[in-house]
Length: 241
Image (cartoon, rainbow, N blue to C red; front, side):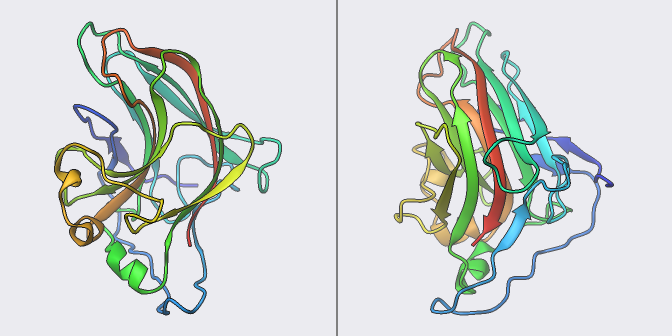
């Protein structure tokens, strides 16, 4: 399978986002419906081709991490209990060895269109789509406390890397399917408590969604010497529902 030429953008604090250098705009088509009619789920990626580089939508999964000592790899694996033959496994060491109070982070992100053109998720929800569904299991590594698994939506409406997010602080060690509503206040995506995303209107944020991001990060500390190694996150069946 061909892979679009992309490079990872560097971010000063938390998670980075995939940024393509080439590609053709291919905004997903959402079937018009209403909130009383079931919609047809749109599979963003199910990894059944054994490919953890390209998504089914046409973007690419890009791994990035901070420069303080963290690392992440992505692998297509056959894991007991998953749906189908393959899922994506993220292995991450979250480490701040810089001697300064920096937030250690790792990221695996994919643009929602091949050319990184944003999608108006307000239209998606108007047409009846409720949120993002993923099947996952995860294991925290050994070391400092304060690590979280973050499912994030990256919006071009903010420029300081603050993002709407779904925070997993107690990952399931067995396969679990989670539905993450887009609408704030419904037990799904939430605002961060810092940056532009903490105050921007929900409609403005969702008008320019560019990427879906999975991050394993220091969530509460930001301290020098933070170290948590051997985190694992298995992800499958990423779907708009």
